[in-house]
Image 1 (cartoon, helix red, strand yellow):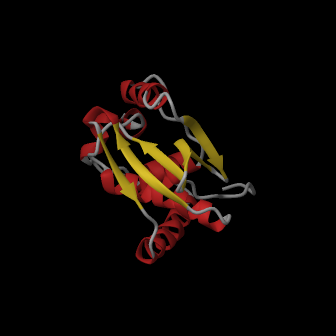
Image 2: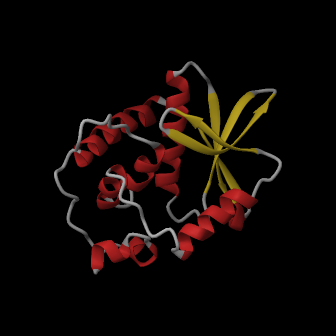
Image 3: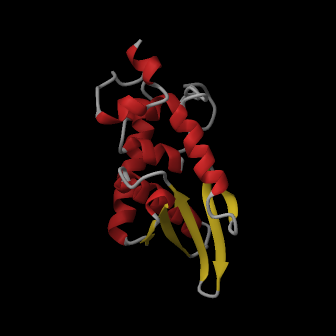
Length: 168
């Protein structure tokens, strides 16, 4: 990598749990197929769901999908099209909560699955913070590799906007 500063983001945490190769590609600013149907659907869901809430709170290298301030404090939300990758979404949201905590802002998180009409609360605890620390170190290790990890066929590949890059 060049001399630019390397930062871990919530998006990289999300993809770490799905595909290390995608972490490397995103971290090296190799853009996925922006015309991919799943990319378009994700943008649509993010833009047109939860219209009464504020969109995209940017903190550090991360952008949280939605947020609101209640009497109990700040609530940040991550909107996903399905709960299929709930564990990676949970860790992505925990990363955002950790970034806010490092800046002295206490918040709680909500994972939202509008197609399924569900939401789940996410809280930051010591165990999650330890896992995030380990994951961030591993993401940095991947980003410093001179080339992306070899592609491995997983179920996510069928709907991946990088599929052509990996399997052509």
